[in-house]
Length: 313
Image (cartoon, rainbow, N blue to C red; front, side, top):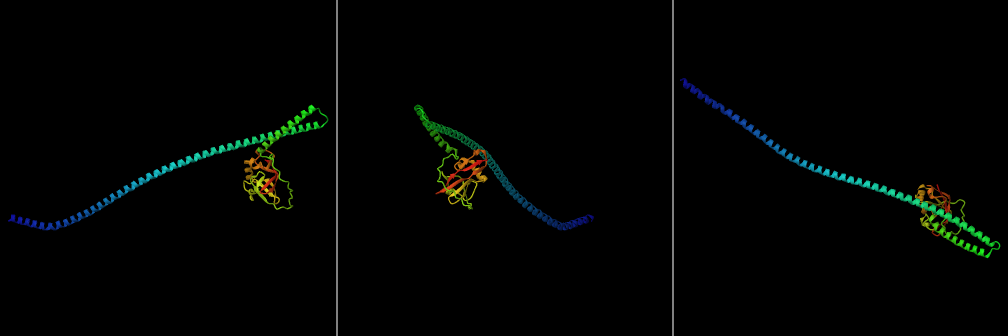
């Protein structure tokens, strides 16, 4: 009896256990399914994040490659710029050195040219002075011989001898004149023989209206061409013409320092044909007008009738 009772109780327990275990198992399955779905959801999110991360890394790699290429281009450009700057600096250095050498050469050429012209000027002046001295001495000797010939009786033989001597003196005088005519054009001074213009009476009014004109240098053999005369002064107008009437004018050197500097740099060409020097152009850096010259208008030329007397200080 006890055995059957235990069996029944066990059977009832099993049935109750089975009945109780079904709802618990069903609830556990639902929770498990929800957990699995959550895990799958998060797995999908992780996969998306991995894909996005992969794409982002790919984009970053591309950008890094572009940055490297840009850095290479910048490096090449900087190298080209450095080479260009080096070439420019080298060119400037070469140009500066060449310019310096050319300036030195020009200064030396100008110095030796002026020195040579100065030496020639003084040599010609000394030669001219000696020739004039010899010429005057020969003229004196000629006059003395002519005077002796006219005085009292002289023997025929002596007379013939003196006539021959006089003839020789005439030949020497002619040679000296020829030499003087060759030397004078080289001097560029008032020793140049000019054809004298007809004498004009200078009737200057008491209260004249002062009109001044300007010129650079005497371009005509006799003076200044009318078309080269200017109404205004500049740094190259060396001469000042003061009108004394319609056809008369006085001439002097401008006081403008720039004009005087320009004249001194080429005194032979610019001053020699219109001025009479009292000393050498190399003795100063300023030109002083001692006596004004005179001009007469003849057709289209202002002819120089009197040279300007100047001194260098």
